[in-house]
Image (tube, rainbow, N blue to C red; front, top):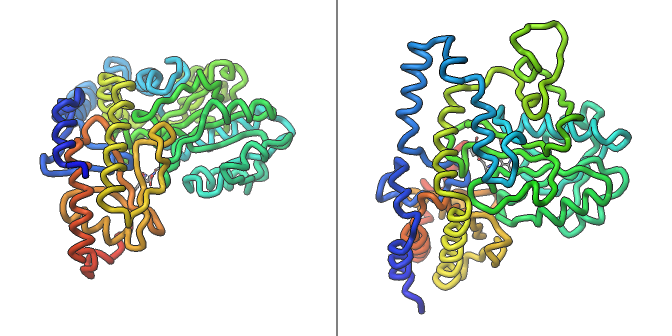
Length: 408
Ligand SMILES: Cc1ncc(COP(=O)(O)O)c(C=O)c1O
Ligand SMILES: Nc1c(O)cccc1C(=O)C[C@H](N)C(=O)O
């Protein structure tokens, strides 16, 4: 039997990223295993926000659009995200939410595939991805088609305009082979849009290496941008000339400050801007992104795999009654593990009461996320040992743990 506690201590001592935990405002006794849903607060963020509020807004007032370069923030932060996902700096812009960016890019893809209307995805994809297709279907612009994972390639026929997939599945953690599916879609004459919400900052992504057309991603998970942080959108350079998206707001105009009556799209991804960018949120996101790029994606990926592999092995030995539904091989999954149990909700609440934060996904999944910048191996071991104690003692049966909160 492995001594997992001792193994965790050994791995933490040898961890080259251990020093980065101090860059986040996290209590020492907190095992935060939910950074795949809401990333932790970087220590530098409050001062940055304070500076933007007091100096740039308070003193600089409207001149800060120029003097503090607020106007370039969407492109500047986009360029910083680019190396995390294998994109060129001019291929990414930060704007709006993931949902809104999905709408813009699904529409853009449909307009580039005249005569084809089908948007192909998988059942059980993150709901907003499916709902955004539905919205366009309601307007008569798209037709939704869903195929199970092993049937996606077969479902790529001449009617498919766009393949829309989430790279790392939010519930199972399973990761698609981006290069293979992108090629399959292209071979069928379709375009591809990848949702990188659960990928960026934690798994290897090479959008240009895979030949991807479009992508969206989330700012508040592994990028640590804070609750409601804006998302980002990627458009491969070869599509910049033909790009056409329907949310033709003034900030996506070629010359917004000419205040002309007629819309003329800005070149490239700048066209994806719609209204005025949320400067406070985007400034917070920049701090989170700077931290991740400072550590470097290779080191983040390496530790993410070590953390999840440690946890998977320890859980399998200590708690075989909670089967892991995420793939066994670290290269086939994201930075999370999902375990099935009929009382996953209660187990999750009991864990939270012991300062081990994971989350629950209906109907029966306990999900643990491993944000590599600040999760310690000791946190992973604590999750396993507390869970074992909660099950053995029957503590999870306390009535208070069954009460459902509005947000789970
Ligand atoms: C795969 C995926 N796409 C989209 C979203 C939602 O993005 P937003 O709330 O920014 O629209 C999430 C999670 O919140 C997600 O997991
Ligand atoms: N986006 C969220 C929110 O606004 C509130 C609570 C949770 C979330 C989430 O991030 C859900 C997440 N995408 C998931 O993987 O479950």
